[in-house]
Image 1 (cartoon, helix red, strand yellow):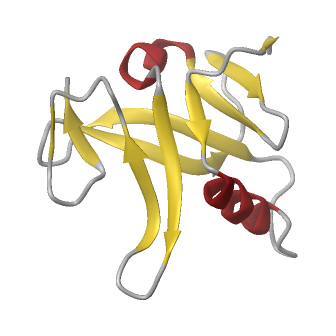
Image 2 (cartoon, rainbow, N blue to C red):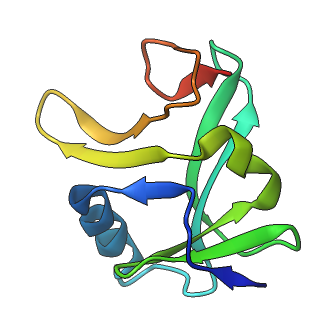
Length: 114
C-alpha cells in the first residue's frame, strides 16, 4: 500500500482526539485502520463511511501528523476537501461531515448527493 502526503480529507482536533481515544482502547484490533469513504444509500443517495477495517487492495493510505487513515482510491472524487469533526455535547454527539462537493445533504448529516 502506497503512502502519500496530500490527504483529501481533513480532521478537526476534536475528531482526531476521539479517533485516537477509540484506537487506544484496550479491545481495539490493531490490524484495523480508520477507513473514510462513501457508499450508495441514505436519503440523499450516498452515505459517508467512517469505521475501522483492515486495508484492502484498492486502498490508499494517508498519513497526517496526528493520525493516518485509508480510503478506496475511487472515493477521493466525492470527498476532496471534506472536513470531519466530532461533537461531544449533550444535544449533539457524534462525527459530522462538511463536504464542499455535496450538492445537497439530508437532515441526518450522514447522507449527501453530488
